[in-house]
Length: 105
Length: 292
Image (cartoon, rainbow over all chains, first blue to last red; front, side):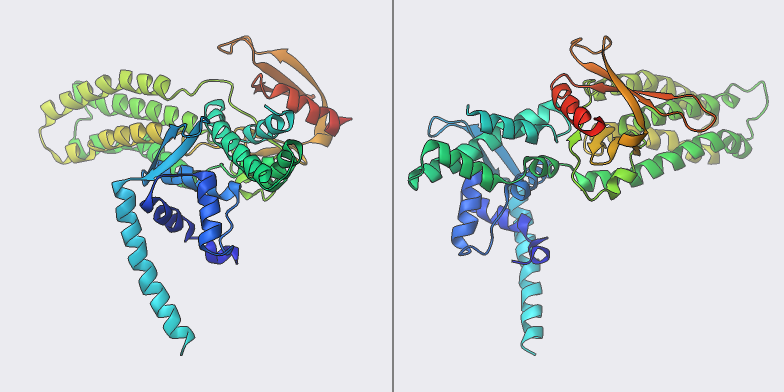
């Protein structure tokens, strides 16, 4: 997948993933890979800084848990993250409809 | 922990600007690597193979560490530094402008000294904010290669220290400001005098957010050191020596003294860099390699 295309959509992808349930970094990378049939392959150097940025923006928050005995950092979406996700979704709908219209012209 | 994993994590950590942050990221990445190892083991690989494959999949540790650098914050910092300069210029000009509007330029008037005092305080505030933000490293933003090493600050961060200094100044500014209003009422000049309050609020805001907008003071790149935004190439360094940083809190940090070759008609030049104790060994290795 072209990196330029991914830019600007990664935040919304993470927020969407966390909308369902709290997750940890590795789980997210695997899920993106599975759901997108290998199209969205996140690198560690991309995902973690993004997660930290989203946390600074207060769209997500983190907590430590140890479900399998190993300490693990989980992320969950906040109410302002949910609002941001709605805004981004609406923006994306407008953009994709317009682009599809243009491509089919 | 497996030696390969710990050395991988150490290399990631060394690219992150503070010890506190690096510890947080280390724990998270450690879990990430062990998840990968578990998956490889489930796929039938031995422990040894699984670790090698997991680390290979992780990629370059320097790059991972460096990716945590907050570029947006650094770029924003440029505009903050610019606005600080403008405000400082206003602080110098306004003592001459305010008496012109208020007409209180006579030597017998108590208020004739107030703009000076207020502006002195504001300048001091700007100085503290400017120091916090480190007004140097601009060229580094144009680097397109990953530095070998971002040198951690050896001094603990400081925002409460500066905040306390600012708080000490705040009552002084407010008292004089109050006196000014008492004498003047809501005259034309008083509108002008609102600006120190705005500047102080802005200063406090900048102090609170300074962590976000900082730029590493020292870095090691392929061609040499970046010291406060300037490249000091390996070829310009004549020699280096280590000393202890006795002023550091825990007495365990080090001072690196770099001696540069003298330029024409000048003496040789020494620069001293504070080096965190956990980065000394790695830096020593780079120095030996680059300066041999």
